[in-house]
Amino acid sequence: MTGQMKRQLRFPIRKRVDAVVLGASAGGIDALCVLLEDLPAVWRLPMAVVLHLPEEHESRLAEIFAQRLPIPVHEANDKMPVSAGSLYFAPPGYHLSIERERTFSLSCEPPVLFSRPSIDLLMGSAADAYGPALAGFLLTGANDDGAQGLHRIHLAGGLTAVQEPGEAQTPTMPQAAIARHIPDYVLPLRELRNLLLQLEAVHEH
Image (cartoon, rainbow, N blue to C red; front, side, top):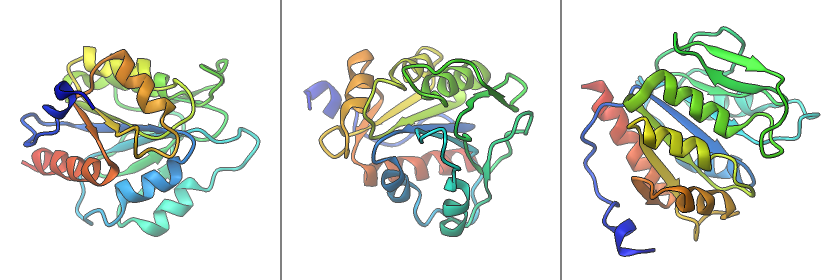
């Protein structure tokens, strides 16, 4: 890790964040379990996740994480409002976007970087909807999806965080994001979890 990146592994968080978007691919379920385990029951930040899964498989992500977490967990539906304190997963086979009125939108547009749902599309649309009040987290994965979307969040003034590539089960995705722009934070999962908790603490106040 470069000295420039080391310089950024510092807290505290200075600005309020109103929503979090997360992306992951290969190894992503295990990474999300570490990141989200034992969240406080009182939680206000909405979180939306794109995790690459085979389109032909029915997703049980919402069911799995609903059993693990004390907060509401949903598979996102078209026109569903983004509600505070809830965790949303993109359904397999659909792109998930967030509209400016902060509702979800599903589409069957062609895959982006061979992926549908696309992390880039979720992050880019959320950057348009939330601007500087958005945080994006990009975790382990085997392609470049998410690098452009995270950069969009950066350009909108939002906070960007990437899993330390050396810790990632598959480092391609975090490496691609770092090559695109230097994120605000490059951290192992346990520290990303601390960052998420701090974002919630700032949001609470």
